[in-house]
Image (cartoon, rainbow, N blue to C red; front, side):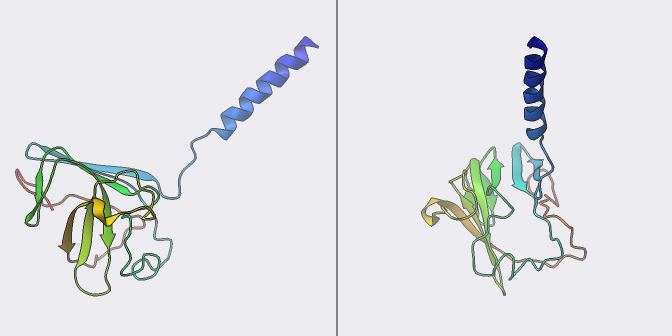
Length: 158
């Protein structure tokens, strides 16, 4: 009788071990970090895949705010005040959103609420900064969304 109970307990422990595996995610988490001068910039996001879909104007509709990734809203962090365009973004953490448009410049939004999933509870009153950015077509489209800091020098980055 004692042997059966031990075996049953071991079976339960193994079941929990199997169900608690950290399986690959359809939109895996990613982080890109860059130091510019004395400032650390970080973008933390989930990387949705293209999967043979039309992204702009279909999966991500024009004229509708998008969380700039998948799952939880993309997080942008700066360790000091920075200038984006001609506006100042204070040191801190922000949710990053994009408002794509069929033609012309798109809006990039830095919002103070950092615990948003999607745009359901987004509140424009929490926006810290909005800038306009002109989209550019890429030669080669990657399968998964990517953020990069380019043209990095001692005081600037794109």
